[in-house]
Structures are given as structure tokens and as C-alpha cells.
Length: 251
Image (cartoon, rainbow, N blue to C red; front, side):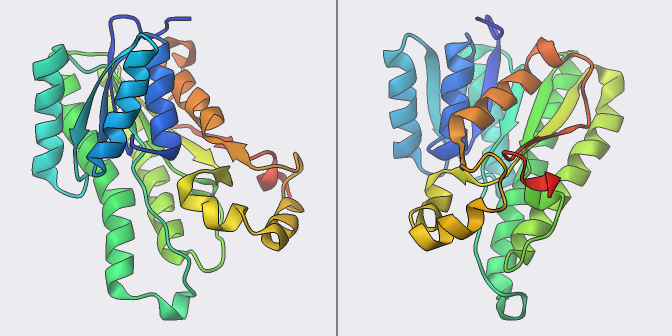
């Protein structure tokens, strides 16, 4: 399956977890991929694996909280590949803290990466797509935490609720330009971000009681959903939040 033949995709947060899985999935389906991350070494390792599998990719150091670096990311993509068809804004961070103990710096950092970073990347790339008349596809990484609250994650929840609102508003405004904007909303996925929790046996036993499928998700399963929303297979879907949680939100 080569749904992205002759297309170019930018993936942020591509050095690990869902971002890395997304970069590999899009490349496996034919896209030339810009693998962007603050962790350049990690992004380079992902690019090496893509090339070893016969794909095409380039790693870039990008801090999504800095508009100038986001603009440079787009410029590098255009210099290397000549166009951009897909943006997968995956970069994100989290922290677990009781609401009464959240520090300003933690709040600011999580909102900067998870929400402002998505805004910068989306606006910069969307402006280019509109100017060039490209029927683009933008996919954001939201979360089930952008649909329901969860204790000790007020800053993370707020950022992901913001991503959902941004996704819906962008879909409304960019639809007339033939640019579709959707988000994926994963539940508990096994990634470096969740490793400490998912390797705690007692915590795992307690948490799995919330998930009908009785397991955590894999990064590759989220990447498959991103690829679907970024492909023409989802051609009449925009402004949607695709939940990937093993049934957790059915409770």
C-alpha cells in the first residue's frame, strides 16, 4: 500500500514513541518524511531505520515552541523535497502533579509544547498550503485527556482540550481551501512517556480495569490512525477526533 506516493510529510516529535512510529508508517506507505524533533540524534536514528527499509527521510532539529524554528522546518522541507502535503503534529510532553502543586514553569512548558507548538506548526504549514493551493491534510495528536478529565494532569488535560478546539476551528476555516484537519485521541499507549507507569505491576493491574480490551495500546496502532486521517481514504472527514483507547471511554 502506497497511499503517500510522491507526497511529503512533516512529523514532529519523530524521535520516539508515536512520532517515530508515525514517521516510519508514512514512509513505509511512500511518503518522503521530515522527521523533526528537539532530540536530533533520536530523529536521525529513526531516519536511518526508514532508509534501511527503502524509504526516504531527513532529520531536523526543531523546537516547536519557537516559531522561527518551525518556519525553518518548513523551509528545509521545501528545499529538500519541494512541497509539503501532510503535517502530523505529534510532539508532546506530560507531567503528573496534583492541581494544587502545579508550578507555573511546568504549566507554561506543557502548554507551550502541546498547544502552542501545534498552533505554530499548523499555522505555518497551513499558510503555505493555502498559498500553493495544496489539498493538505493536518493531523494533531490530542488525547482522551482532551475529551475527559483525569486527576493530577490538569496542565496536560488543558493542553489537549485546547488541541481539540484548535482542530475543530481549523477544520471550519480551512475546509474551503480543501485542507482537512483532524486529531487522534489515544488512551494509554506504551511509549517512553508512559514507561514508568506501564512498568509498575500494581499500577498496571489497577489501570487495566478501566480498559475493556485489557491491554495498553501500541504506538504503531496510533500511527495507523494518523496515516488513515492523513490519506485520501478519509477524504470526507475533517474536524474529527479519532479515539484509540481500547474502549476506555465507554465506561
